[in-house]
Image (tube, rainbow over all chains, first blue to last red; front, side, top):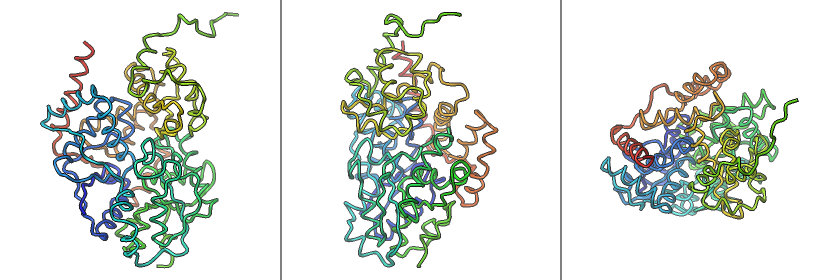
Length: 286
Length: 196
């Protein structure tokens, strides 16, 4: 099994632990990931507020480069995953924008045909690798550990290509396969605050606090996330949340870190030391 | 006591703006909105907005240009797409918000020193320069341009990120910057052409 890998800016920066744990888990499962050559920023949510066609062209360059190889693309960051998929869909639905974007790409010698599939690692793990194959690799199950599976917005909205829009379950299944217990978590797909946590903290911090508080109330020892921005907001701003509301002291880890631990990988190679709120509780018992 | 007109006459509305709004990507079926308010009910930010999403949609399609473009609402939308998924008329509210943000930036009518439009523009500049975004540099740049004092309150976070090796002060750059700039410049030239 082989895929192209689109890391995006966060996985090379504040979300390093996501890249480290994702690559380690896929390597251990025997799945090859090849980083897309010279990829550029996906545009995230910010660039769409500046220029629509250019925003699609940013995605277009990445997709055009990816098209040279007949492989699906894995995009672990929710903003990249949506940005690339949204561009594909819009370029398909709006021929006039597509014409402008393909012409601009052609000016740089690139061709875009819209034939690449952009997928989330959860989708690939559940539907290509399969739960059975993963279960066979579990060496030290996370018995007695309780997690709040938190999916955030952009992997199930607006498109729901591989999971339920209201009650996604793919991560729940992986965590259960890893031997952990999932608490019932109704805020699974509620917004973490996105970039508002940094830009308008009086608003953004409240949204992050709501997620953390609910996870605590439900008895979770950690929130498990699939998105570098969710992880950053929920983990990085807890001291400010403590000052404004109350101390929650809730570790926030990536699903790949939890899965990796159960597969017998070390805390170091999974980037677990990069959590600002110590994630040692997840390591208890190993 | 001076008497001012508190509401608009129908003739005061900007019909061109209404036509523009309904011609944007995602705004095509703006006229189908039945004002049910599901967008406002699902929106996690609506309680901070000056106009709820339902009201904003109505103002936009009726041509209340100034109210819409200078609203806080468009900048508080975090793009979580909850409204779009729930809308019984399949109106792409998030995309309409994006179109309104673009227009507000173009016309320079957003609240002064408000960080979000500044962030969006700096983000664009950084991509043109390097092709990728360095989050550390972006945040520093943002605070210097909006509120350097607030930057001090972020030092705790900065130290934590440094301690955990998640911060970098070197811009991460693509190799073929010329290729990307050619694409962006071609679209810029194309836009000027369309405007003519």
